[in-house]
Amino acid sequence: MYGKSSLPVEILRYLALGIYLVIVVFPLYWMMITSLKPKKDIFGLPIQYWPKQFSFENYENIFQITKFHIYIGNSLIVSLAAAFVVLVIATLSAYVLARYKFKGSRQIMFMFFLTQVIPAFIGFAPLYLMLTKMNLTNTLPGLVIVYTVMCIPFSTIMLQGFFQRVPSSLEEAAQIDGCSRLGALVRVILPVMLPGLSATFIFSFVQNWNELFVSVMLIDSEHLKTIPVAMNSFITKFDVDWGSMSAATVLSVLPTMVLFALCQRLIVEGLTQGAEKG
Image (cartoon, rainbow, N blue to C red; front, side, top):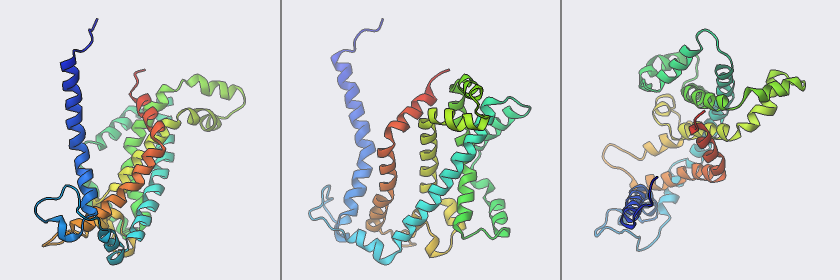
């Protein structure tokens, strides 16, 4: 039997957690206050850990000199569309791989795992040539297709684990009551897997929302840029507009924070279920 932790051990534990929390939170805090400082105070001395005066000029600046509202809309369209398509395809593929054992199923899963350890940029040259021939470069649909392909393997791996935890007897009972296999999946299995589906959807959305390299490679037009590409434009050859970049970062973080806040319970349940042993 394990005895209760002594008071010094508890103090050290909370001290370590407190230090870790400060390390994690401080960059977010610094980004926030930098976005609220006038440009003259960002690099002023002594360093201001709390602004002497708050200013929204950085936020005004990103909307005046850029089309930031368009960038937000583009990111939302691409991220939501790709995450939805990924969820549909990954759900069906994970269901097949979890419920049916056929020749090559293990090899398919191995290939999915393999895609997670191979650097993604290796395939960008042929991918760019393919999209060029299909006239999908510099288009949002082309970006959606690439994001979908990038997220399907890991999403399938996630969902396969959830399907394996759902007893097949639930489907059999639904089929006895007159449901087809697809009807049993939609009416019985998917409601049970709602936390796992939510976790997968949010994973795909966040991955797409934050992606930069593919967006820079495929998008040239100003009105088609996503938020990461727009933020990258604040870095010039001789300078970095830290005020505008901080303001843009704060605004770009808000949608994901709202999404996590609204779906926190489902995410925790989904990740917990996925971590349980069979």
